[in-house]
Amino acid sequence: ENQSMHGFAPSHVYEVGNTTKTQAELDDFVFNQLPEKYCISQYCSFTNNCHNFSNDLVEFLTGKTPQEGGFPQWCLDHGGQALSNLPDADADTIRLASNKIAKVMMVSFGKFNRERMKILEGKEWESLDQGGESK
Image (cartoon, rainbow, N blue to C red; front, side, top):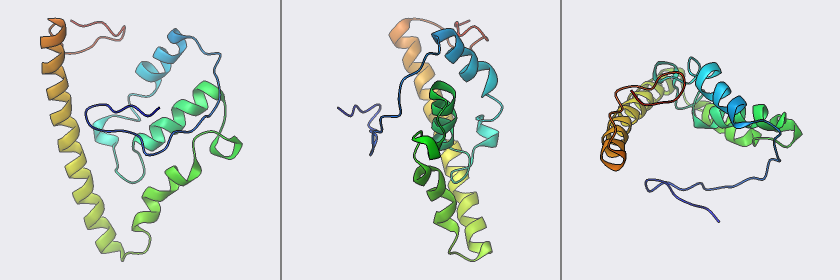
C-alpha cells in the first residue's frame, strides 16, 4: 500500500530486494558519506535529485545497480532527457529556474519541519550533530 507524507505519495513502488546492512551502517552511510553529495548547494532538479539519492541508497543496501534490478534506470534518465530536445539556452534557463524553485521549497519545508518537530517533541532542533541527536 502506498503511503503519503505531507501530501506526497510515490507514483511507483518497486521491490528491489533485502539488505543485510545494520541500522548503524545505514545511519553512517546517510549521515556521514552522503551529505556532501546531497546538500542543497549540489542539488539539481535534473541530475542530482531524490532519484539519484534513492539509487545510491538502493545500491548501498542491496548491492544492486539499475541494470541488476535495483533502482529503475528510467527514473535516473528522465531528468536529463526532459531537457535534451530543447536548445541549450532554453534548457539552461529551465534548469536554473527549476533549481531555484526547488531550493526555495527545500529551505521552506526544512524550516516548517523544524518548527513542527519543536511542537511535536518539545525539543529545540537548531542543528543535528553527527550522532543524530538534537542539541
